[in-house]
Length: 308
Image (cartoon, rainbow, N blue to C red; front, side):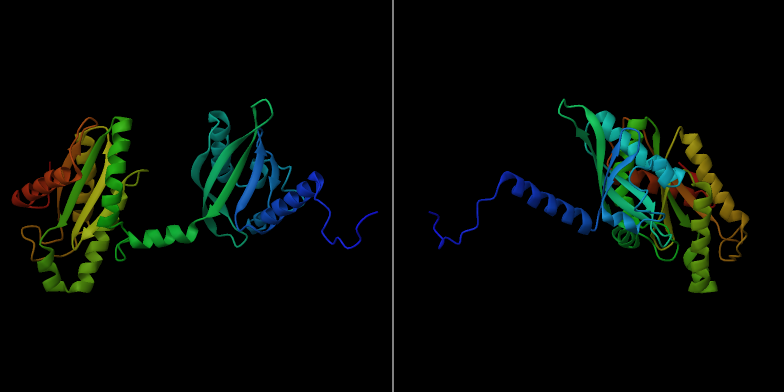
């Protein structure tokens, strides 16, 4: 006869455990402030959590089952699908930044980890993506490494990127160029025209740099006062020198009056180049010193010139 005073709950069955786990899993999917999804090997969405409601064009009734190219603008779909394919083909987790539009039409950047899903035979049958919005963090980082006046990156960012760009140029077997730029007799210009006008000159220099160095991977910096720098890869020293000359000529052609800068009578630049061959083992400081010496030669050759 059972003991009616025993108030302990009956033991949980395996089915009870599964149901509890399933509730936890769905609660996580419904409430996690991240994007979690899976796709099959044809790019069709097979699962997506509730947070996808934040995306532009999301429709709960049709999202799951649709292809990534039906759901997103083509340039966005291509980046998403490319990363899925890498994870599936290479059978490994990858970490990439991806961009998608929110319902308010703003473009957001996500840090995404994508990894393959395997069946019982160890074959890849789908990929899973877990994405966290890093838009605000990237904006804060950009503010910390951006010169407020010109919009160029600052010296801190140059130091951050230098080693990375040196490795990239070595891998691609290209010549890495460090270009240093000074505004000729800038102190005299400020003394004559005032700092507000001097700020306009610095903005003009930044614009000339952007016009010449607009390729993916070209980096431009304001490293202090009237000192600027560029870091970029090229196929030859002559190609790099031609880009430097383009910056010099662009600013000179603007004919910004500067009577304290004879014989030109307008604002000009002095530029110094240093080159890093793919097999070079020079440190950042050594390369910077080479570019600084070239800049010194440009100034002593009469200014308004490019030296290497």
